[in-house]
Image (cartoon, rainbow, N blue to C red; front, top):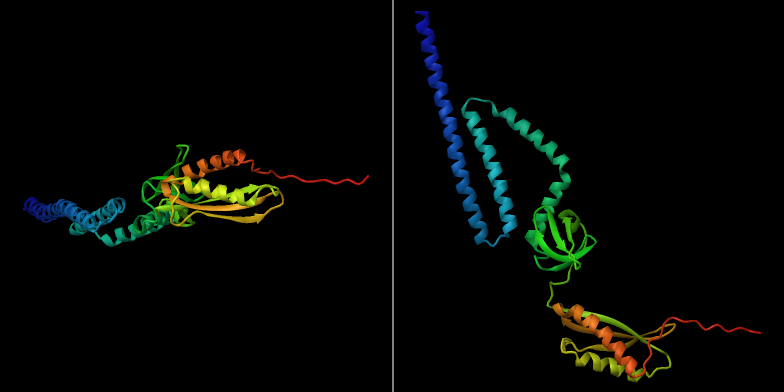
Length: 269
């Protein structure tokens, strides 16, 4: 009789907890299936809304992680496990992780800002965090730059957002500034007309606004001309280096000197 009661009790526990286990397994697998659908729909919605691909992937991963935790808690709760303590543990663990990785989370937040506001894009030439280069990749953690001498620099996004960002590719045109000095004994009008001819003859220099040439300074050893011309952004460095060479050669041809710093010393016998 006693054995029959024990068997009956065992069967009752098995039937009760067996159903709970099956229910928890069902919650787990159905939850995983639902998470996939939600993440897939979220990705499609963000794609239609033109959300940046990097930010979209990051948000989908965050949604997936949060929903997975909720499914686990729901499955444990169905088994009769008190999930309040687990929530408290997760909260404490989250606080500890947040304090330990505050710089990492700061970079993530900065990465989201960069992707959302788009102060620059892949392919732009920028100067940020003391470095200058072409943007190769933008992630939620860091930005990869390639320098003119083909070095790769990885900059944490927090360092970029926390400082000034100069985007050299944002505008279609840029201004090239020059300072050319001539001697005090040289022909001022000839030098000015020569500079105007050089820059007006360069097809890469835009006609509107027209090149600006004027005497900018009467320096200690030279009369300095300020020259400002506008070019397409892609022609900036070509015009800059070619113009310096052209001015030197033309000045030599016309006997216009480019003085170097000098000092006259007078002695009394």
